Amino acid sequence: MFMSLLRRRPPWYRRCLSSSATASPIPPTVTRIEKIILDGIKATGPIPFATYMQMCLSHPTHGYYMNPENPIFGAKGDFVTSPEISGVFGEILGVWLMAQWLEWSQSKKPIRLIELGPGRGTLMQDILRVASQFGKDQLKSVHLVETSPTLRALQETRLAASAAKYGCTLQWHDSLDQIEPSEEAYTLVVAHEFFDALPFHVIEKSDAGWHEILIALAEDSEVYPRFRYVLSSPSAAASLLGSSTPRFKDLPSGTRLEVSPASFKIMRKIGTLLAAPGGGCGLIVDYGADKAFGQSFRAFKSHAIVDPFHTPGECDLTANVDFAYLKEATAGLVVPTHGPLTQADFLERMGLSMRIEALTRDKAERDAQHIRMAAQRLVDLKGMGGEYQVLGVGGQPREGVVWPFVA
Ligand code: SAH
Image 1 (tube, protein in one colour):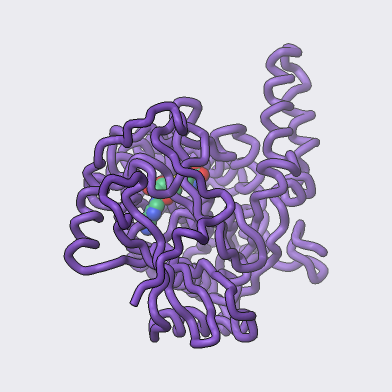
Image 2 (tube, helix red, strand yellow):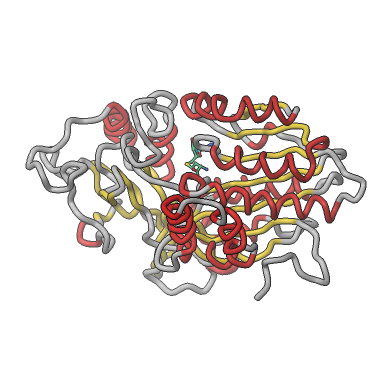
């Protein structure tokens, strides 16, 4: 029933025995989440990527984001994100969000801010600083959608003082479903490196229909990694995913796609919140492109790409975001989408250079250089500036455009 895909490993595949790659010939001991997954597959058979990813990242106690033993962010962690590189990043996102609010709300509507997957709370802290300058008296509530208790605690430490200073409430939610559309408040939504962490399925087309690529036990229990990829028979679930957008309709046999219904559902909810009578806008920033990917799934450990089956629960797992799919999720709602633009275009058109100029004017040369280099990293087209995309949602056109989303 399942076809082994051992011979069809993705190009980035490499056998990896430890975080320092092939340093040790001894396979790492079985992690706690790995044991749970191995036992589950033994009992009920191969599992979708989505199940594997959800277990590895979000298992209530052993998941990557849930376990306080994982360093996750920063130089000592597994990856660094834009808000952690320079406070200017969050400031510019904040300026865009508040500019839409000012444009919409000459009557100064109350503001509620929602962030999905706030990490250490750094981005929200920078956005709050800007929001308080534009509309301090209107800033009412901050909603943080976060599943990890460990990260919630970090966010509280980071944000409690700002919230008290600006007179707004801080609330945490397990899911965006817990937040209702508002008649009164203007809703600002931001999601930075959130969608890439959501579970996805991998499907493959053949002349017989859509199959799903599943994760099975390695053929030999002595082999490391302890998992392998197999291809299911054509299935109703795979067909449903393969017909979830017209873009997938005429693709040739052999096409492989990563599809995230979880992302579609959350994006639909974002659209519903922003289309409410209170109005709203949002920014979604992530790596990916305006198209689907087939083999972007990867794992990070200590700033290096490792095999996604390596030490499950101790590595970050991620896949590129299909922004076209996110846009399709808002179809039929009265809320336009804009872009995506590369992060470099977005930041530069929003005045990054002028802001850096102002910030460095009175600084010692060494500090000024540090600020300039951080900004440069955000817009480097060979790195973050080119790989990250910014999607705008909602907002108020001026003379037909929502700046900086112009062709
Ligand atoms: N936005 C931050 C953190 C990115 S890491 C930054 O850019 O630095 C991903 C974040 O999403 C973490 O906070 C993680 O705990 C959270 N997360 C992952 N899956 C989630 C889910 N299904 N629901 C809510 N939060 C989730």
